[in-house]
Image (cartoon, rainbow, N blue to C red):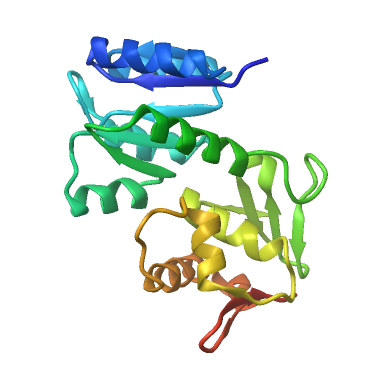
Length: 225
């Protein structure tokens, strides 16, 4: 069964071209021209990747990105004409997994979708089984959920992937480069400092359980029980 892509974009000609190209590469594409249509389809489920425009006739794609990320780990790729650095930062901080600007290469788009599908694929423990850190912290990769002493903690997609990367390798030091590659596409220019900021936010949200995340000076981070 082919992977299913939902594309929310009001440019019918562009969306049709993308759907035809991705279809020739083995991906099944469903198109929505408005936020309302897109949300309806998302709630029905069954999609493996969301391609989302920021500027839509009935609202802002960034709002949908933020709202959907709070309830789902579905990979989100923002595809928009808004190419300013500030727009990219906003999109990624709101939970987008990748960000491309128009005009774009369909070959590159396909490669990025494939990368998102690989990163979202099976990894870590058996399906449904949590990654446990000490007695207080549990990470459920399949459910996009984290609990501290049994209480759920809300994380952004980037924070969640960062925590998963560390929890999957307890006691092992992961460099900032390794963590950057886990969180984002290899070809994106992201500063090492970005990881430090995400770790700070992650520790703050985990409260006392944040003590499990240890910094290794000049190298990176590790997680310990």
